[in-house]
Amino acid sequence: MQNAFRNIKIIDMSQGIAGPMSAGILARQGANVIKVEPPNGDWIRGAGVGEQGMSPNAIAGNFNKRGIVIDASKPAGREAILRLLRDADVLVENFRDGVMKRLGLDYDTVRAINPRIVYCSVTGFGPRGPLAGKAATDSVVQAYTGMTFANGGRAGPPRRIGIYVPDNISAIYSAQAISAALFERFTTGTGQRIEISLAQCCAAIQAAPMIDTFTHPDPAYWPTALSPAGDYKTADGYITVAALTQEMFLRLCKVVGREDWLADPRFADDPARKTNAAAMNAAFAAEMLKNTTAHWLNGFEAADVLVSAINDYPTFRDQEQTRAMGYFTEVDQAPIGKLTVPNLPGVKVNLRAAPRVGEHTLQVLLESGFSQAEIDALIAQGVVHQRAEQA
Image 1 (cartoon, rainbow, N blue to C red):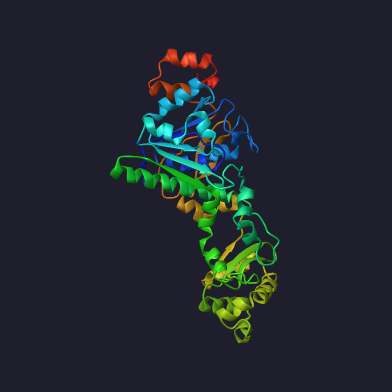
Image 2: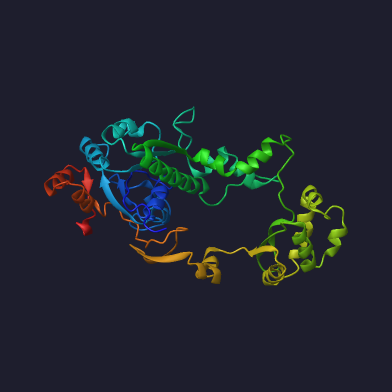
């Protein structure tokens, strides 16, 4: 897949992670994505450690975009954005319900000037219901959707997953929904509004454990898919192991030197191990402490048992398999310099640096039909801004 969306123009007014990452996926598939920010920039630029507004999340979500500054709260700014939207294919926004209406950039207004627009709204909980206006953060959505509870396991306590799962999975679902809407537009000739909520996306990716729980209403029930399975401490590190089938468990027992487990009625077959998962995992954990990670890796790999060392990010980056498959690439990212970042799966498009605030304002407005005199007037009014070194 290369430049699949090369003729698609996207106006990205979103901030944070989910919306920008969604538009960023399409940018890395060739779309012409224009990131429209307020004068102070996307708030995510100041979240985390970074220089000149280039925090890790601001970089990760904005590769291959061009960045402009327009103050949408001013009438002239609103008109400038509507002008950009007249020939746009997609608008992405993730403000609280009602904000785009107050700005005069709601779906009905935009559709009136461009019936072909695909208007994607990403919110925390959706535009209807008692939580429609509630602010959403990763931790709040994980808690609300049961993800924190599920990650804690039956023994608890509840535990938040350490990466931004709700935002990132919502970005993927949003990009897929936008792609589907663009495909449908080829048939109908008209666009549509897409409503994506972080909470619904978190429900979607938890479908299987939710079905399991809903069909087993006993509060004491906890889904157990495999045993032994999980993360285990070794003599010098950590390892993850899973016995997927009875045959694999047999091979696992041979590697560990515990073929007596096969004669133990608690562990003899898959149903028994699920019933006695706690005892099985405890017994297996005790064995893992007796040798090194390398020892167990070699033994389980040779026996075709599902296994991996638990790597940190630099170790993962430097793995031979990682390099062979080209999981990472380098980009010259200001103000950092050479930066190693993950490639987008299935896409072969050269990576371009994420823009700084207002880096491409003049370029984008000129190519969109604004005269230099119009741009100068907007700059004088404080409606648009251009990064000084690019002026």
